[in-house]
Image (tube, rainbow, N blue to C red):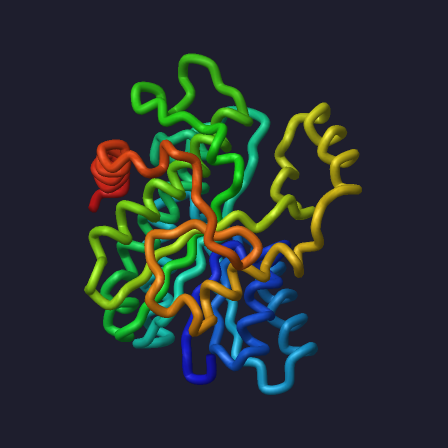
Length: 278
């Protein structure tokens, strides 16, 4: 990865942080995003202290807010004219329904729309690299999701599990749709399930959900192990020409059958682009 430039969203903790440090160790110049300036600075310092000659910088922004995504992209462009890999990793599981300043339910806004907007805003840079890669961190829970286009904001009855699963299904559908659009145009797009990983993603869960999550942590993977597939898809020559696929433990697997519905992919593509102004 020497000479390559990578952007990892949600890079200040968990899978994102381990992905960032893994790619730095491979020689990449890495930009990572986070919502808190202090945590961004701490993460950069932590990576630098563990990697001689590390090339890493932090970018602060709340990716659930579309103006913040666009501002962050402008900041990135001011620092580099090259981008080889985008790892869409930032996400959350929220116990209570809240709307963002853009009027979208925040699970949908952060877990899906941020992926779409960040990718679209950076497509030109990624394609200009000649062999750009987009890596979308999804989840096996996509198989339990259902696209409710009539109620994407959860107004008829919000459920955190329903909202999360829907957003992860959207990640995989978006991956398939974008891969088809970009075929033969200098860009590969793939999605992955990192495994059940102990991260801080569920800090906004309800107390009951946090209790259940705490019990399940005994069976979770470490964030380091959870990052392996993201690092593999971002860096491995084995997947240089692979696109529109879904990976688990660095192996291509078939996603839920619904993900292969081209009409559903296209409907999501259209709706998503409208919602982010693309």
